[in-house]
Image (cartoon, rainbow, N blue to C red; front, side):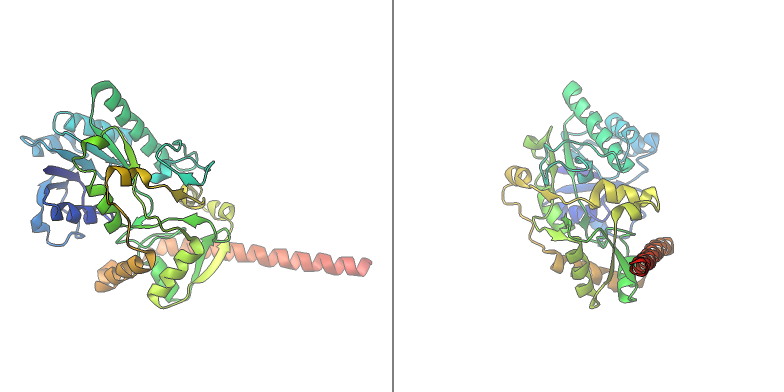
Length: 348
């Protein structure tokens, strides 16, 4: 089977690339050839082109057709139009990587299936992905375009899952340094994180799967954790207990749309994913990597090379600013409350 990944070197897609090779797939990667995530890149057939440059991509793809094309890096309807132009006559199956954050927010039911409504008023990223899905399904209905939609949810491999802040080494460095870590709300909302190796097992079962055309799937772990547990497990992997500060989501969201979107549009809500559909279409699929084991692999990956332990100083400063503002507000509230109690006792 001849398969093209557009991208294929990211946090999730690199594991899927390796899994595809292990199944004997003849895998091509269309990218600019700048990523260092892939081990032994000589195993892959690289087509070097910028997918955003239609003329360049069309020339690079001249003479090629594929059993499956997967676009890992399309985020807007305009980019989907490029895909339709390039691959209408070049593939038997087109897989679009969407996101589970397209599902209804706030959720009206805590258990999410693929039939859960798509609606996210809080996050532009999610709304764009919804528009991409709608355009592709329109193409499927009107012209038979062979689309399959896949929705990952907070999948990790070369990132550290966080509720607030960047998912690079910044959070690990804060924990190791004893700095305060923000957990939204009281930290008891339910969340699911999925290792990319588990995701890849389900995903590769969809490649070339004719029954999956016209369908959408999410692929997640069945392990359900609270945000408190997630940070505690990260701390255990680092050998240091995290210094957690619980801050209301509404308060955090005041510090920018880049915080409000991922929180209100995704991570602040309790969500339980029903994976019945992917298990039905890919018999035998089961996520097997518990977070306690998977995050140790991720931490080890960061620690293998110093260059991977990148820190985002802007994110650091934002977290510090939020914590300081929240704690100052709490102090002012306690002071005012104490003053009110004292005044009441005096007047009594």
